[in-house]
Image 1 (cartoon, rainbow, N blue to C red):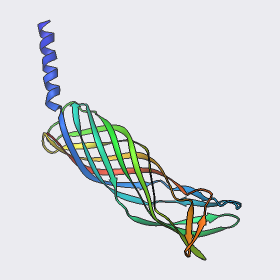
Image 2 (cartoon, rainbow, N blue to C red; image 1 turned 135 degrees about the vertical axis):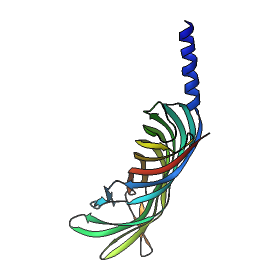
Image 3 (tube, rainbow, N blue to C red; image 1 turned 120 degrees about the vertical axis):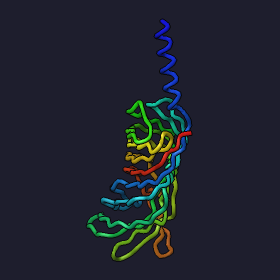
Length: 231
């Protein structure tokens, strides 16, 4: 019985060595999924926009949390997307098809509560530390500077932003440079919900109403490089 109690104390002490608060900062690259959209006018057939690619956005990654034990950490995180204009060629189709362009800035700022499982039970300087996990939170999505053009005309759409639920799944590998400081590479899938434009466009100063705004789904694969310090 004494041996069992002693073993329990040792296990508790070994876990407390790895427990503690941390901060993590890094750079991320968010690559959005291509998709189809449509423009709907009252009394007219809808115009389909095929294979629109919103492009990519840089991210600044911030998080702070706690290592509960060697295998689990929890954190509050902000994945802050940065605006970057991207122009993509799309096919507009109603009766006939024509190739045009859409230019816009698309990005999300996502607040998440994340949990990660670490596969190794021992870590320290010179050790690799693979992990996986996910989180849920809220995303503030932006669709800005939207302009649409075909060979004969062009139009603009007012900036729009929406708040939506978001979730994230992914993993990565840390490398511990010291017992308290690590660098890591990560990859994740993020669904930040959607953003919908206003229900009108502006063509040569004239407002052209839509039956409903353009809806853009913000799904992306994200790649990150970060450093973490545990206190």
